[in-house]
Length: 114
Length: 116
Image (tube, rainbow over the protein chains, first blue to last red):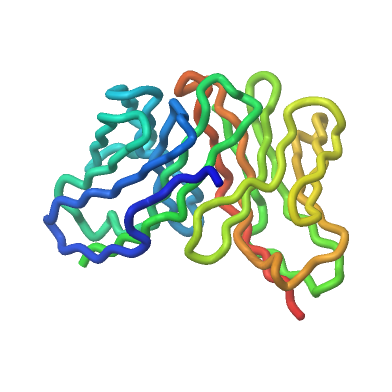
């Protein structure tokens, strides 16, 4: 069964901490994405990677960075966590060029910053 | 700009009744339209999609959606709702103008509650 795995389901971190959210996919997909989900706002794109070591800023990249050293792994980094980064974080992957196909999502990480 | 609207935050329906979750879109070019469902504290799961062809598409769990080009709508439907259908539903359209066409624009979501 193909899947996208996010390393933590729930995380609680303190303000100012550096936080790493990990995502691994086993489908050999070129594209990987990080979204945050907030009530009434839907999903907002934080960062997008279309290949190893390649990344593009999404709609809300401030306060975040990413790393993609291997094709299957895409990490989201909160450089100095703040309470307004409390949210549900979703990782997704897709095959590049396959416009008729959608995403495969991970189960999400609910991050609380206190 | 590409956009998706889901005009209802919440839809309530009695079990056994038909349900509709509404979606309208605005895109340049041909739309690639998707519906996803999210159960509590989980990621999104694919339900169905419209790419081309028949305007009525069928998907998982008995759901279907009707593509209407003139009304730029892609409403999700099910003839007989189940309590287990209660979840958050997202409509999405592929953004062909940005991010090399690899990204989706999502609507804000509609919470469906099916009452026993």
